[in-house]
Length: 560
Image (cartoon, rainbow, N blue to C red; front, side):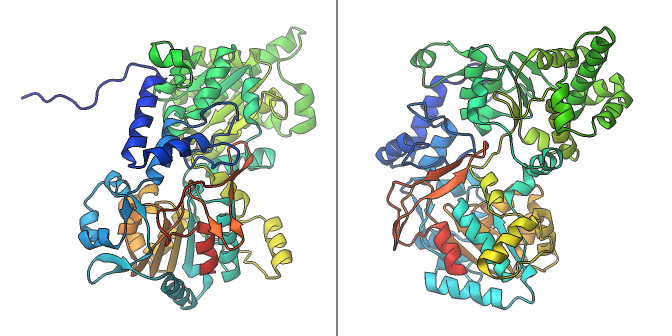
């Protein structure tokens, strides 16, 4: 007997009518359609809230400034479904562990603080006052401050993250494992070693001026769809979009803008990538070095012929060092090695180098296809070196652009979520708050998991996120979470980590990005930082689902 597959090949362009249909389904399925339609109109707008999805910048030009992913995040947050004591009266933790992650999140918003009862295998209601007392009891019972781990999701606001790091350091630890340890850590470390700061060097408007945009290891159509608008606009005005991606991602091939009616109702779509190269997994560094080798050969040939070189010699002399040592490494790397490691032909690498050479302004962007390898830091530095050759830093339409995933993972690091904090941060905290913060490095995510497995963690507080699902070795991570003395999860929705309780466990329901936060001083707003180092105000507009939900900042402040 033959069964019809539920998954059909997708031949259309990314975006377009399919994106609009999916967005409509999300809105209707939330059981709160009118509220979510209003939410979407205020997302990524002044006097509105920042998208809880990705960290792509806001252009402030479009009528609708959201994508399918953003619509999904907002509508699933602003749902009427609730996970409360009645829900857990019907479901044990063991039974829920048999369900999918989709099922868990689909059940709705967490609306009241809950404490795990190992006898009944259920979460049961607990008052906020009892929550503060229980957490304080466990923290005060620690033998030393490093028995506490403070995990952070990239969706936490700057304000919550700042209070969080201050609380941890006043207790006496730099144990701040966070989601950045598992995604763009190599970008920050590589850029810091190369140019002194671990952030990108471009603004969103630079995409309107670039002559060539090189895209390494990214799938914008899935992970940050609003980037496709910027790439499409650049391609339409004649910029070369050069993609290095092991897979052929539809969004990097063709994109139909959902905001253009003609492209929604017809097969019309715009081409994104003018050149598309498919390197080996982890072959991007060899590909970039191959481009540099081709460019260096051209540079030397032109100099031998008495012609001007193709490198920005003034920029190199004024702003760089060590170029001869890098050239020696390039000379020592044979074309045969570059072809074997990159998975591309010498001709393809020379073609890509030619596009870079002819462009006056070049942007290089990348995401986790670059940063998830053992040699990721070196790859980031290789891309940086390529850009330095042409002086493609510090001028309009050119630069380096690591594209972050979570909406505020960069902002978290800016305000102090760092297990290896810089001395200038610690010195400032010491002066302003009149205490001596710890100076020794703390735990990153892998260190924290290993400490849990050694039964050394008495308190784990997770400010958002889903560590059980986010860490690469899921069974090992789940075992680690169960070994903690107390696990505290500050969350909007149910997820896999909640089902791995420590010896004691709390789930604390927090407000979402879309919801208003009213404190004694009045209406509050928070801030987030995007991939372009721009800080945006974000103010929720919807009424919270329950009076027992608290803002992240309020929860951390009360724990402290």
